[in-house]
Image (cartoon, rainbow, N blue to C red; front, side, top):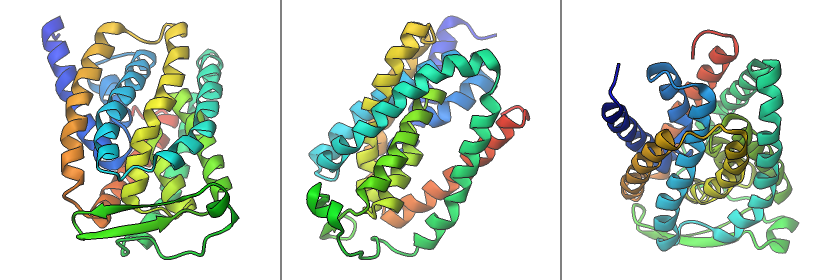
Length: 286
């Protein structure tokens, strides 16, 4: 049995590691925190989800500011997609009370796991490309100005890009926001998939813009979690501190690795999360 101080230190260390992974992949630390808290620290899943949402805000605040300064994040695209994610987050957070009351979590876990695993092939097929294959701009590219550029320090060149299929990105973002509010995670995986796969943006732009977006999405969902009593201040404080430290470390690492490396890491995490979600839905402990 850990003392309160030992428990707090453990929470900070675990959160710092999660923050590094979250900033590096654009997933947010919450994705890793919920299973660790519930499996190894015996934290009820409702409080783990509440603290995870707070940590997502911290991750976004720490990582997003650095990425915006480095001009990798596309703020305009991120803000446009936030309309869908925040709407979905409100719907998901309101649904969570019904889900807990009727014990239907297993359906969401299984569907989410299948969705994640189904994207592994897409990631592996694209992993041989450092930058996305050129696709002709469509009408959404012009109307919503889905383009930008950044300097890639690894490739030592300025990368110009443009996005496509804004409407498909919005649909995926609504689903991502819904899952975020429902499970208490940042849903960075779905956000990255929406921008990388659906909108054909470079992986670094997708992960950094996802980091920028998950904080706004989580802030929306956490306000409803707070009203429902699912946020425990002691746990949330340690989590936010650790994740913030980890997020700053993660941003330093990101600038020194290639898009391919990030994609491989992202694929491994997709497999891990997909299996984890399905096992949880089937009642096998995770």
